[in-house]
Image 1 (cartoon, rainbow, N blue to C red):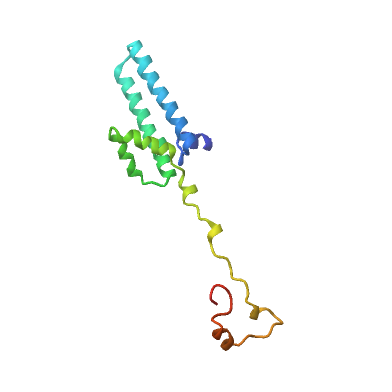
Image 2 (spheres, rainbow, N blue to C red; image 1 turned 30 degrees about the vertical axis):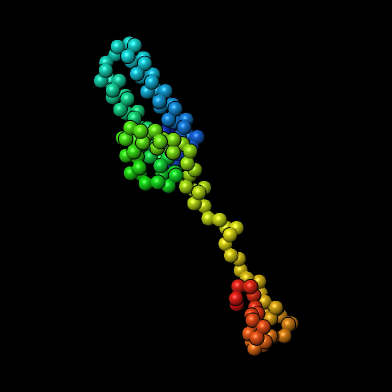
Length: 143
């Protein structure tokens, strides 16, 4: 039962799930407009269904997608601006999730320095005066 609630009211929505959910709810909206207008049913019931589907699209499809890409939820106000809502919808569709783009790159992190020659057991200690005269000594990290 928990999977059904998570499917209907998701916390995060990735790109493909966002596209499929928007297409499905838009298809239902077009059916409500097309079938309802052809049959001449009650207009206020159709209006109530349309408002409910738009609210579902906004709060349970677009808002989880905004969270998934790491943006603030206030960006959903762009849906109210006529041309910006199309650009915003395309941006939600194409932008990678924040977990992929903000992932730390562990390959570039420094690793522990190798022990210097003087730290290896069995080798005589090198005096500090000889290493300072030659311009360095120790490991490559300046130890």
